Image 1 (cartoon, rainbow, N blue to C red):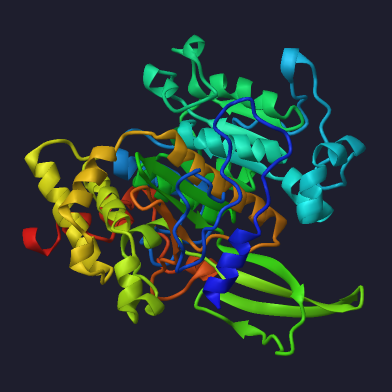
Image 2 (image 1 turned 90 degrees about the horizontal axis):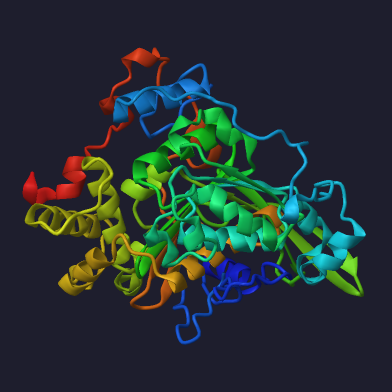
Amino acid sequence: MENRDQSAALNQQPPLGDTQAAETNQPVQDGNVTGQGAQPLTAPSMSLPPNNSIAGNGLPTFPNPDDTFTALHQSAFNNGAFVNPNMMIPPNQPIMGINNLAVSQPSNGNGLSADDIALYDRQLRLWGMEAQQKIQSANIVIITMKALANEIAKNLVLAGIGSLTVVDDQTVTEADLGAQFFLSKENLGQNRAEAAVVQIQKLNPRVKVIADSGSIMTKGASFFGNFDIVIATDLSPTLLAFINTATRLHNRQFYAAGTYGFYGYIFCDLIEHDYVLQRDKSNVPTAIGPETRTRSIIKVETQKEGGKTIEKVQKRELYSTWDLASETSLLPPEYLRSKRRLKAVTPALSCLRALWAFQQVHNDRFPGPVKYDLEAFTRSATHNHQLLSLPAETLRSEFLRSFLQNIGSEIAPVTAILGGQLAQDVINVRGQRQQPIQNMVIFDGDKMEAEIYPLHPEGNLGRAQLELSTPMMPVGQVDATQIYPIDHTTMMMGPAMQ
C-alpha cells in the first residue's frame, strides 16, 4: 500500500513552472521515482522527477530557543555564542526588480490577480487555484548557494512562491563557475548570495528574492521561524542537526540535501504533514486508521461529481529529526523480511552514513587521500552496512573507491536531478495534494537510481519527539557529551577498531 501511494504521488507530479529559464540546465520534472521500493530512474535523457526539548536526541531544554543555539555553538565549536541579529527584511518593503523598478506583488494567500492566472495558467490547470495560492504564500529560505541550490531556487521561483531568501557568506571562486549557472566570471570575489540573487530575480519578478550575506552560524533559532520551509544544502551534519533543532522548535518544515559527484541525498523533516488524495470511490470502503508506521488515514469524505462518486482521503505522515534518521535508524521491517529488497538497497546509504560520522569526529572535514582516513572510512562504511542488515557482498571495494573519489565534486546533471526532485516535493507539500518524500532519498549515479527509504528510530515520531524528556539545565552546564549521546568514534570505526 505504501509503495503504491508513493509511486502514484511521484508519477503524478506536474512541471514546476510555465516560465522558462534562459540557462541550459532545465529542472528534472516528470519522472518515475517510486516509493519505498523505488524503481530505477531512466538515464539516457536524464529524465527524472523531479520551550520543549527534542526527545531521543539528547538535546537539553532551554527556556529560550536562542539559548539552545548558543549552548550548541559554544560546546561544539568554542567560537562564541549565537546571537539573534533579526536580519530579515520587513515583509512590506518594496522589491526592486530588473532595472531597479518596483515590482507589484500578489497578495499572498488572498487570491490571484488576472496577471497571475495568465502567467501560471498551465500549473493552475494541473494542481488548481487553491494549491497555487498556497504556493504563492510560501516564504522559503535556502542556505548555501552552490550548484544544487541553483536548481532548487530556479524551480521554486519559476513555480511562483511568495519569497525566497538566500543565505551564504562565501565569495564566488573559480570552482563555483563549473556547475552553477547563476554566476559568471564577473562575479568572482563577490558574495555568492548577492551575486546569484540578481539572476534569480530575473526568472520571475513577481517573487521576492532576498540575499543574506551573513553566516548561518550568526543566526539565532528564531531566525528560522520567519520561514515556512527551510532548505539547507551542502552543509556538514553538525550544522544540519543545529538547523533542524531550530525548525522543530518553531514548527517549521525542513529539507536537507547534498551531492558528492555521482551520489547525493535528500532528507526531509515535515514533523507532521497532512495531505488529501482525491480518487474515484471503490467498492471497498476506506478504513480510518494507520496504514504504515508513519502514515495514517485520518478522514474520508465523499461527494458527487458528474455522476461519479469522488472520495477525498486525508492522510497524515509522521517524521523524525535529521540526527535520528541519519545516524542509527534502521530500515523498516518490510525490508528486513526480504533478502531481495535488502540486496537492492544501494551501498551509497552506508557510505553516506560513514561520511557523516567521519565529519562529526574530524571537525567537519572530508576524508583525505591518507591511509588513516581511508581505513577509518572503510571500517565505518562496513559497520553501517552491517547495522542496516545489508548483505556484505553489496559493499564492494570498487564502490568505496568510487564514492571517495567523488567527494567534493559537483556534477550538473546530478544536481539537476536532486534539485528538481526536492523542489517538486516542496511544491507538493505546499499544495497538500500529493504524498511527500518519506523521508530519505539516496541517489546512486552508477545505477541512475533515486530510492526513497523511511529511516526512523524506535519510539515516538512526529511532534511526539518534541515532548519534554530531559530536565531543565542552565546553559553554562551544557557540554558536548550531553549534546551528542552517541559515540561517533565507535560508530565511525566499527567493532574492529574498538
